[in-house]
Image 1 (cartoon, rainbow, N blue to C red):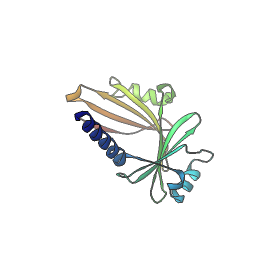
Image 2: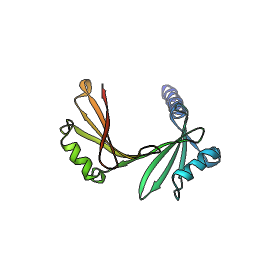
Image 3: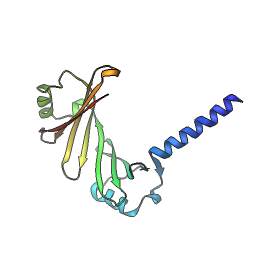
Image 4: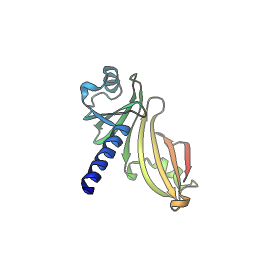
Length: 158
C-alpha cells in the first residue's frame, strides 16, 4: 500500500514539474506569429519540437542548423529573443581564447561553452567558469562578441 501511495505522489510531482517548466506542443498549438518569426529568423531551418514555458511565457523551438542543435526563444507576441547551442571548446574562436588566457578567470574550471544568436548583437560566445566547493562556489559567465571582443561578465556566488 505504501509503495502505491509513493508511486502516485511521485507521478503527481513529476506532472506538476513538467507543467511548471515547459509543456511540449504540437505545431498546430504554436501561434502563427511565433511560427512566422521562426521562419524569418531561421530561414531554411525546421523545428523538430516546440515547447511553451508558462513561467517565462516563452515558446522554445528546437532545430538543427549546420549540424548543431539549437533552442530558439520567442515571446508570445512573436518577437525573437535569442537562440543558443552548446559548443565544444575547440569551436570557440582563437581571439577569444587569447583574451581568456590573459584574464583573471584563466585558473577557473571551464564548465560549459556556448553560442548565442541575438537580434541586436549577432553571435555571442559564452564561456562558463566556476571555482570553489559547494559552500564557497562561484560561477562567472564571460561574454564575447563574434570578433573576439570581451563584452561583459556575470558573477554569482552560492
